[in-house]
Picture (cartoon, rainbow, N blue to C red):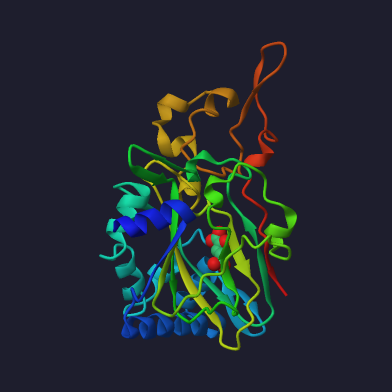
Length: 311
Ligand SMILES: O=C(O)CCC(=O)C(=O)O
């Protein structure tokens, strides 16, 4: 990461790297997405069935526009269609920057997620910047080094010009101290603080996923939107992805350790995860000093509502 990139990243919370993918790689990525879309839509064999199940695809106006982030279905495509997505996990242009942004030992938390768009794909409301406060995806800089708990790298497979729509953010909002005003969330009255970076097929966009206020503008271009997001976390952060399936106490401890534990003790034996969702292991203490599990506790920790709206 050059000092200029580091300055820009620390200042704004995002960074664009031009032309990371070669034209051949852009073609290969698009071919893989076509292959997956075809199989998901029409395939009747077990392979197509598993892609359909794992990607949980959303369609709009006959076009595939989104997949579930938890399952890395693009890595499960048959070769050669998985080759590019696997190579991008540890791309030589990405690794040194991720080491600087997230710290050595960064890990893929979830994805790669596919986000498409056609005319009619509505806004993905802006979110992030500590609302609600999530220390594991926060950003701080100390002793001359910056540290983001979560960094997403988005690869562009089609152009996304300034008026096309797609990814938008409030640069600098990873250091914001006040709540996001409603007009900024929807970008309808954005105070001039929401920016839509101009991106070309082959570019890679890094953003502080969680720390930075970000989302997407409606897609307006005649050509489809196509972007693939790798959701990385620092070594010690757990956002979602496999963390959710490895959460249970039985995945963390031997049977004889947890056997017979009451719910309050089990509650502290869960693994790390940002949004446990099931059997929420949150503790409370009553005025009488009784510790109990409160499933409704810390509702603010629930992930932001799925603000993606398909028209
Ligand atoms: O590029 C986009 O559509 C925004 C993605 C986003 O908001 C997210 O991944 O949290």
